Length: 291
Ligand SMILES: [Fe+2]
Image (cartoon, rainbow, N blue to C red):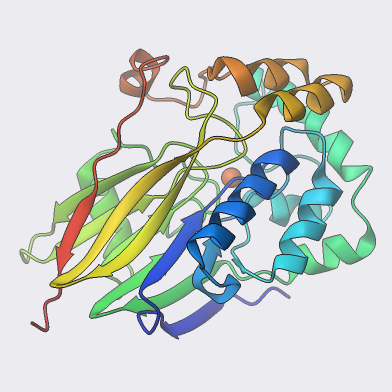
């Protein structure tokens, strides 16, 4: 049985947290993320991955081994849930007739044939929720939404829906993964309390913005509170493209360098219209309410 909730306690004893998601079996991207963390001096216990270690690319076992050796906090994504519990598909919730569904069959079979029993056991043991406090803010990390591991929450998803999700918890800030687009959105609920929905972005597949880069997020203390900063992760995308193409996932291999998703079935109209536009994600500053 998976640990449902992993409470990390007060994480602001260190000045900086690193959050990323979606390694997607992309070894070069995951190695680049680890190198950035080392360069920034961020220890594994200050790093959270929002899940989906395994998906579209060609090196699932290598990525799993790297992440386990690294020792960072990992949330269960729908891909870990599906592979861990030996389900028949990736559990992304794609429509059966969609292109996403057809493409996911190839990578899921590829990964499923390679992961060992001990990998599945480890994936099953991952928490479905990670909670922590940073200064006076309570964070809740979920893969899709609060209520569903495979719900897509995008920038254009209605604010009321994001608020309704956060308000089912005692958190001030929700960090989601799954949707692959980095963003931060300030929200105000009916009792005029400030809430925030965040997505760190993913490292293993571009953000559909016409660049090959992945994305990660830093939570950093400053003099009056803390800041959220999103950063691009450049890496050797051609290396991952080569292995992904050889493995037969040619559509995803193309996407690694074009920066364009092979299809947009899951995207709302607004995000579809933004395909190929270079993404900018502005920093957010949050004042410490105790000051
Ligand atoms: Fe996911």
